Image 1 (cartoon, rainbow, N blue to C red):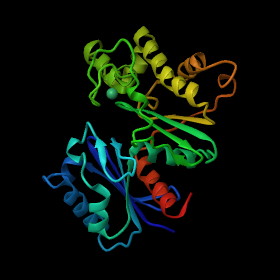
Image 2: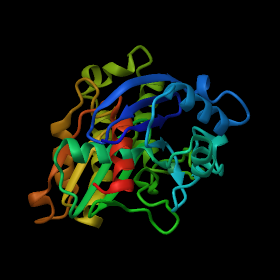
Image 3: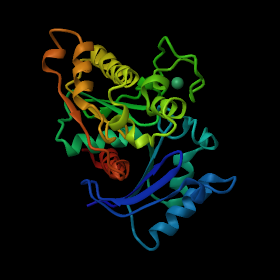
Image 4: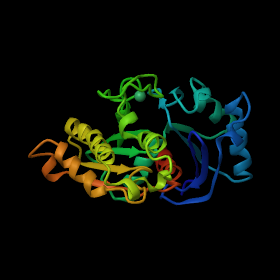
Length: 297
Ligand SMILES: [Zn+2]
């Protein structure tokens, strides 16, 4: 059995654990990104943190997920709006030399999809789309068990499809991206501008009947249906923090997905799995990913 150090670096939190490649995680820790990446030499900081975390433990590989676009070779980050200081650094080359084990870098959402495919028993054959609604919209596409990278490594950026009706700048540098209207950031904006007295966690329970929430749910569905209408996938996995919020109208979302999906098929037999949001998901998924890369699924 392999021992993988799985890491999930978000905009705020740095999560780390020992993943065994079977979905189990031990010694899971969540600390602030600032407490790990604290000097001008962030790769040295990461290497130092991993070494002290591991102590004397022997491990087979390290797999790190980033909220970012990566190059096709998955050796460096192209763009990370939340971690701009990580861009263009030789992540895998530096860390594998420093730690003496293989180091894999990937998009965090790909680790989430590996985890959910294993958890929900989704076959590797065929097309599986993972769509995760957090602050933004994460998207990974798996074809016959292989993540679709795209020519530059930048495939599967569903949150950044252009839409009418948004003149807000997006973290990616564009204006008018779908995630401004269908990501959790839209809910945060509603809360700030319309319901400042409401805790954002209560948005759906207190304002679920508001037309703006219905429109928001419809836009989430449009994202999902857009990808379904292009790819006709075997499975769609929908997850992330937003669908996991209290009172989230899942049935309304599903109705809207079917409404926007091409008839008679794929709407007629669409398979959507609504995945639980779990804090260690990407760390466990990192274990699956590293094992896949080293020995196959
Ligand atoms: Zn964007």
